[in-house]
Length: 115
View 1 (cartoon, rainbow, N blue to C red):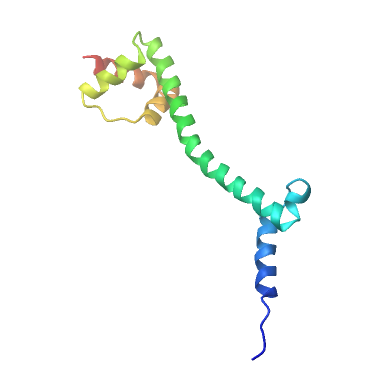
View 2: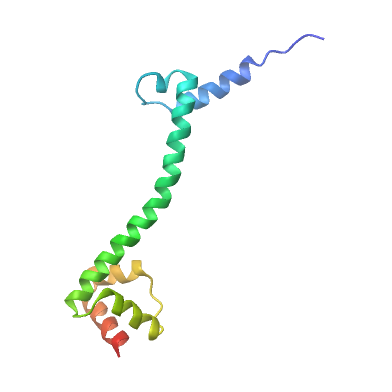
């Protein structure tokens, strides 16, 4: 039986990977071994970045709510505690949007929660 060489499959795999590393510096874009190392690290960092993005946005929302609370003479922690006690279910993203675009509505929420 004759031997079948796997060159076509390997070539396809290499081309697919090298296509993803387009724009990288030096050997990282055109030498398969270096490109694979770099791509694995890039994918790992991309995964980490997607998780970190959620944390960064949450801290941004908290900072916005906190500054809006200070305008309404209360602290962020007291405001969140009052929201929980008064059973108002609004997430921090919505609260920050209200604080920026609807300050009157946010002020009403602060007053309702503090009662």
